[in-house]
Image 1 (cartoon, helix red, strand yellow):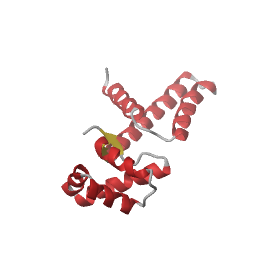
Image 2: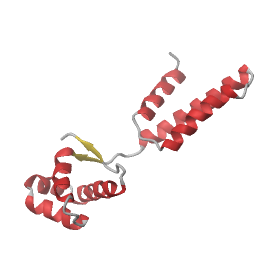
Image 3: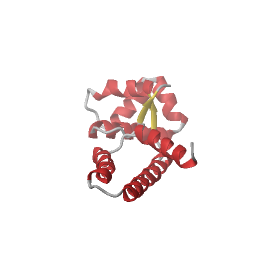
Image 4: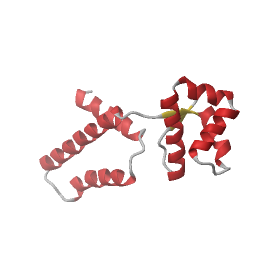
Length: 137
């Protein structure tokens, strides 16, 4: 397998494991199909496919370098227990901090970072997007 093929395979794996906007997915599929559908000569079709694959590798490299916020599932379970009360993020975090030693220990470990991750999780939940990935631990 050539270096190019290895890079393309790695790019596809990264893209398959990343939640990309549906529009981007549709655009990529449409571009790939277009090379065949418009009746290009073989050399033009090959050039279009290589250009698209190179663009996918470039996108995957950027996605792979993007930092990913993570929050432990045990912390999410505590936070979600308070969400039903419709508290503000400040109040929810302060109550969880007061009531749960596990949450308290997690926040204190890195106050600024973990407080912001909890807020990002709550904001994402309110918006219906994943701003912080829930992980075991």
